[in-house]
Length: 136
Length: 381
Image (cartoon, rainbow over the protein chains, first blue to last red):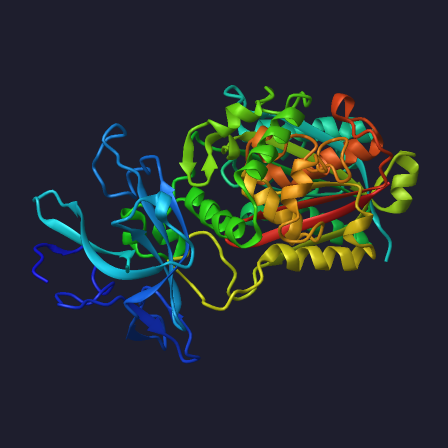
């Protein structure tokens, strides 16, 4: 996977990588959370790359800036889909949903991890973030 | 143990009042409640009060009078009002005091609540990518609930239609225009499946209640409304709450059913014995889920209940008779007490144009909010 740019944040997904994975945290009781926050006793763990859609919605208005990093105006803003994807036996992760028309989203549909260009920083460098897309 | 009486109620109109601070609105509600109870400020032995953005409740003694009373500020997120009420309830039941005040008020800036991810122990990127919005959480929660339990957009629209119809008959409501089914159904989509008129907005308002022991109440009024139960609870493991970058794959129980069970046990009655209910309606979907979470119907039955008008003023279980958060807005510190105010008014038969036509004996109030807290009361004549 030849992608320019840098992750928007460190320790969210393995990078650079030909087959990136989300980095979760597992505590002493085996409970998995995302992201890995380095809590006491928490160990990093690579999460499954495929799962099923647990719920979803569409962000239809421009979020308050900050904290939203996008620099578009209200008029330029393009709604985006988001949801939770359940990684079997591990955890449900909140994620942007890409390569799909919201009208086609169905709870339970198979989804797969992908890395996408989300924003450009002030120097014009690409900022990458994880997302899920329909697996089919 | 003995019950606690509500012997006085006061409210400052909800909505926007640019020329009054949140504290002034709180003091306004207190004076009204004192008048309603027929007592003076000097008679009040103790107070619990709170607001999220409106200032420290206890500073209103400057305006009400420096009598030296015990005044404790309460800060408990969306359960602030309910927590103040529970504290006062406990103070009277324990025998420590026999006449006290509960006050909740707020004044929020316009638009959605701005969230700083670090305040919630979240990484900065969570807000940067555009996730830290309460509207998304509510949308995703009801989206899944609808898919699992066969609820359609029709039910979401009917909740809002009812809220604004009731609000139009409430002189203290913020939104006082009844909206048609079509207006709601065609309003702007905010976060699928929820539209503009299905969401409440942060607002302003204040409510005050005077609580008394049975002995004190008998000296003051023949028309006490009795607090049979008051419970505040936090979430169980694995519940779906706002601002969660991840969720457990094991579903857990939210704060509402835990608080509801505690309140029903305390009152010694069941959901079928409740005559009216005020349920947290941050948006249409919340009211639908809360009908089941509080035990009033089974998951999925809401579709029929709403289609048949069973929660309207003339229905089997009128819900949010004053227009709820949808018509009154959400001043966080005041909302829970607004529900109690409305229930007392209805039980006294003083709700005017929106008075429920059937005879009323019992009422139920419920708030739910971040970060997974709920407060429930059960009242009776």
